[in-house]
Image (cartoon, rainbow, N blue to C red):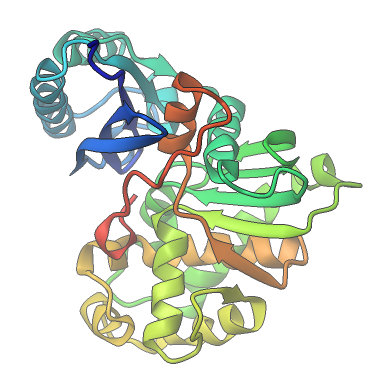
Length: 320
């Protein structure tokens, strides 16, 4: 009797690196291993040179070595490894890319923003109504993807170089947030959204889904404040959350108010601003949470397209 097929998906994000290993058993996929390490790759990229600083390089390679050791336990696995927005910025650091592939033991495919968006949509749409049109939003550490499609097929995609980590560095790296901080970030996000809005003109959707840790964190914050009771995010609720960000005297107090981890709070405001402005730009009224995104999309590509891929990872406190 032959061993069941094993699939491994490695998602090297701007904030965290993820490894998911799943085994195809009969009519379902079973989780074999699931790992996540906070690397903060985007924060370590020099915007001027496109090179990675030494501290972040060491952290990233150490994580990839851990992933390599885990993959050695499943030598027959079909493996796909992708780098997203932060890897796209490493234009001046080919040496790191070579070291990363050598340490991981597998080639790393650097996804374009549009390809990243398509994988996100593929994952979020897995197991959903195939006759339904949907709007999918994913807010990562270094980029934001917006996709509209029908069933499992995307029809309009956009990837913007705005993320919760990069915007925090640019606008929100303060212990206490002020109206000026929020307004500056908001104006920047609005200008970025204006550049891609026409791509979605004429497209309709019946369902609105949000994936990623930033969106989950907003949902949890709304629930913890008693503003939302069912996990969905409503536009009116987002508007009510806005003043809470400036009422807190410090990031620690904001963490206590929203009942989220300090690590998530560090990038919460930027993620919230992106979500809030997307709601207003596309006139969204309500959004439900998707627990599937790029990792499920990667696995879905490796298995039969009509098989459902269960959510493979949900990080505590919505960490990407």
